[in-house]
Image (cartoon, rainbow, N blue to C red; front, side):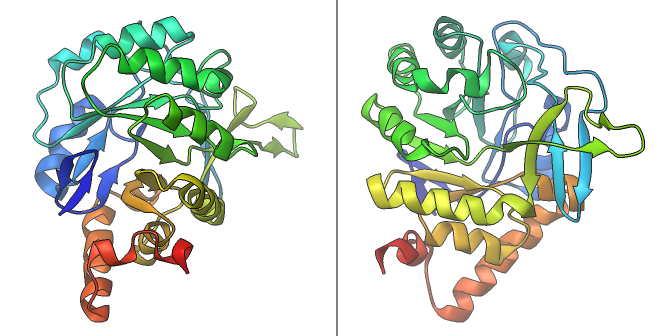
Length: 287
């Protein structure tokens, strides 16, 4: 068992935001038993995704997406009866909207505030500089633990400090890195939106470094993610401070069976080394 924000998780494996539609939640719960599933980021009103193409694979195990926070809106959450714990990801185009969305969250075990998506102007990372005010307001309207999802920016350690000083219970690190791909036959941008969030193996070392730096500075509770494709990747993130591990791109690339495989690989490593989860969390930072 792993304790995060006074919640018990049976193991560190959760599903990251943006991967699972509401209709697939219970299928995944019943067949693969993640410790939790994070919902798509929900806004006050429904948002249409950007025009396709919205997801491309540009290298082995590396993807770029610009879905643009397309979602059915926070009211749809009430229709979900999940068979496993839900972390509710929320977002909006203003401090006030995010606060209002948080106040409407009546399900789930935790709120995750998305102030880091790079794929819709006015949302996500556009509001990252207001993270202190956002967290303060959200904490005022919910009794659920509040985590803040941040991106791989130069000032991420500073923003993490602001989030924690405002009362955030923990951090989710990291979101995608903004990039662009060009079709050299037409010299057009391949993604309709132009830019997109890079995810997968190519951002894994970046995730390791950022989680390390934030943990070294504050020792907060961290949900770590970024290019986890096997148990060793997960243990690496735990060694720099992550308590839970979010799976995202690997589920797109290799399927939901990855949840079971990565869990077994982590457990096999710990058994072989005679270690417990608590032995490895942050160990590489403390050396």
